[in-house]
Image 1 (cartoon, one colour):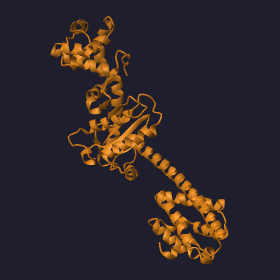
Image 2 (tube, helix red, strand yellow; image 1 turned 90 degrees about the vertical axis):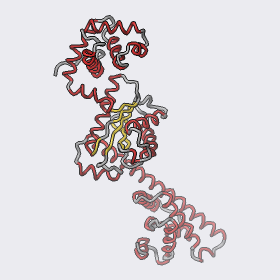
Image 3 (cartoon, one colour; image 1 turned 135 degrees about the vertical axis):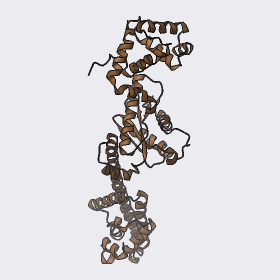
Image 4 (tube, helix red, strand yellow; image 1 turned 120 degrees about the vertical axis):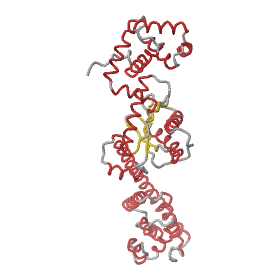
Length: 410
């Protein structure tokens, strides 16, 4: 802006033309903050110095509005306060000789009046700035939440999403993955958890193509899958494992919310890949609960076999019903026998290792396996029967049977 334009904005009285030079100097001192943000502040100071007049409420309210404008223009609070303080210092130095030549008491009274105006104006300026910043943060948080919701839902207009994602540093053409963190109980302070995650994730992966938010009581992290180029991680580390472990370690440091469980969806390209990764992460959380897994970090990739089973639920229900329902006739029910089968298959069909995992004797394991054979007609030690039994056991875990009754026909 030209000097003549600034002079018109200041609207000085003829006797106050010297204030224009004061405003220009203060602007330079503050790193080029526009002199328009001074408003009528300098005439107020001049009146205080020459007449001892304090600022009126409406005049201070106008200063508060200037503070809001500074925040909306992205000017830092320190620079706009520096503008006001520098203006006061320069004005006092450049006061007309008629003011400086007065007696000591008059000068002291003038200084007191000027300091009072400076104190009132800067306080009002900072308050207006803070109010505007809070409004901007709330607006940005609302836009962030809406963007996250639309990205995870995956049914919004692609062009609009790309445009809305750009201010948040998201390149929707990249490959992303979604990780969800579930607290063991309702999280009392989501903001603290978001701040903690943002600090560590931004440091590890960079602040572009990363969003941290909440949805349906879960913490959501949207991150680039090609972390080797996004930040400083080692290329040999698996992206999903690293992101999940990073989140879990940081959240475990929080005083509340633990123990946490983190699920990471697979990486997919494009906008619809984000929604797909999110659904996989949600499904992984649900599956981990049904499977009663002890692992605090679950990767959707590791649960693909369960997803395959669930795609034809009626078929897996038929399999569990046909193969495993006879186990309910055993003393103690089907639970101990299913637990033994699961351990047996997990240890490579080695009875001694199964016994260690179950904390029972080898004899108990062999007895239970024999009961399975007699009740179902399928021999766990027979390779021809093992696949059918193992698929049925996996299906039972997915359906949470026998804790839950098998679903009826659709």
